[in-house]
Image 1 (cartoon, rainbow, N blue to C red):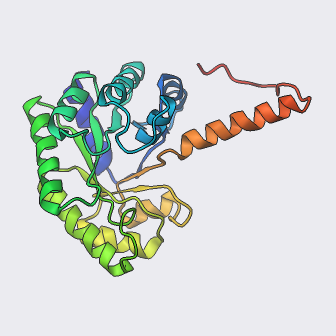
Image 2 (cartoon, rainbow, N blue to C red; image 1 turned 180 degrees about the horizontal axis):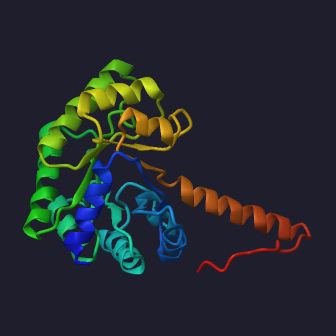
Length: 257
């Protein structure tokens, strides 16, 4: 299968009626563990988790080379399409997408950080143009921070901003619009109605409806961000705490790596 074929499959998964769930990973070991599951159809990296792996805080503090290198290692290690969280593009969204494609990545998150709309649309256009130039039907998950960085703005204002930005990103060639935020079904329904069915990508947070309901509402994609790494590291801490207290290793440990 060519990289164009893999990219086309990831695009198809975003537009299929069935909700695309992607469990975020941060290194080759975690990617292989998730890819081995029968329910895995695609994998997404988590930028926060990869940055933490290398000792960097979230927010483009990690060198782009390190982030891209890990995304490429993950893409080469698994047989399913890989979408990489590339933050805001590290100063050059088009070049960053081009480099990611060269490493086998066929989709990406690109966040707007609530920059002026014209600048954010230009970033999406640059990313889409770079993928087109490579001949790859790249799955661009254009993220708007209308909720995460919305501050004290009223709920309706944040929804309207997310919809305006989302429509603009779709018009600029994005596959779907990622709207992270801890909100309920009413907001999800308004976002789908405003941006379009199978055009919304969300992150699993406490107030969000379960996956089956999100599928009924017309959501395209659900991911989990850095939570997966936190769960894994929490389990490691719990194990270490038990061992320090005189415990022993549990039985039935699976050899995943």
